[in-house]
Length: 348
Image 1 (cartoon, rainbow, N blue to C red):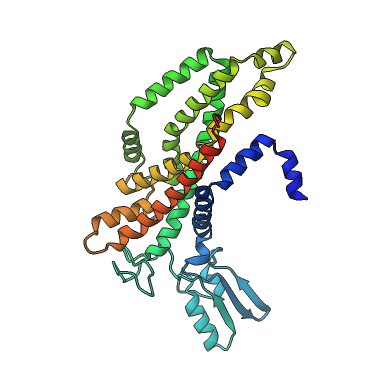
Image 2 (spheres, helix red, strand yellow):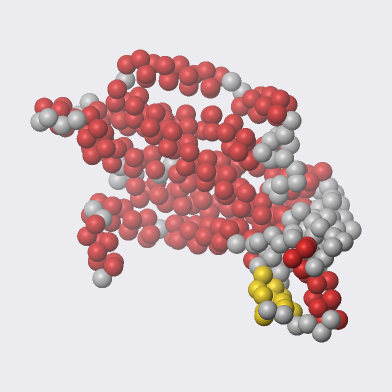
């Protein structure tokens, strides 16, 4: 019933395009691979954290349930006066010594991406599945959390750049005039400014790079291609007879844009979505690799790649793990993009 209701709401053309997309093997493989990586990155705390997923402690008022991997609790809540960080293993041992019942459910990998251990540059083992880095941090944990940072960056960059690019491109292509002239000159100026020089300049002035600041710098350049694509689509559609017919029948410019132009102009542009996301992930990786991305100790694929380059002769696992994760992530996204382009190609 639900499927039938959805089918009635979706146009026959869109149904045909979705069918063509889903029949492609690369689309199914890409979606499955991307969904798997996205799931593990999104739920990183479930798989890797130094604190328990669930901690149950019996008190005088009854059994209390805590979620330390997700919620941060103070040491005072557990009666600890001589420490700022709660060691739940010590709490369990102290409870057992006092005759109180307490138990915990731990993640599969009991390491946090920020915890430094004495095991510096150790190869993969039962304790550290993918080894440790130059500060003794668990590579598995840093890779899981680093993938989440990369995916968040790529998706946010796509959402913001597409929103801004579509709005500016529609205004350029529809109204033309002085606004179109000014934006085109702005694009030309942005294209001749070296991107990396802007990053280095801001990095030197601010003395540090946060997630929002890095996203803002990349966003200054990311909207340009989307805007140009949208401008070209709108210019082509604006010259057709239906626009003049709508005006002659008393229609408004807003009706032409939202009812007739946008539905037709957005389809070719939306096929660029996977490539825009992969470009955002790649940009952040390169910036982190060069040391101009996110500030330490933020987990990052690019930072792990930089360590792998520095210690390739005696710690090859530092290079293999992030390289494999990055290749799988980008390949899955590009497979989806190629399948989308073939299914939604207007010339098909």
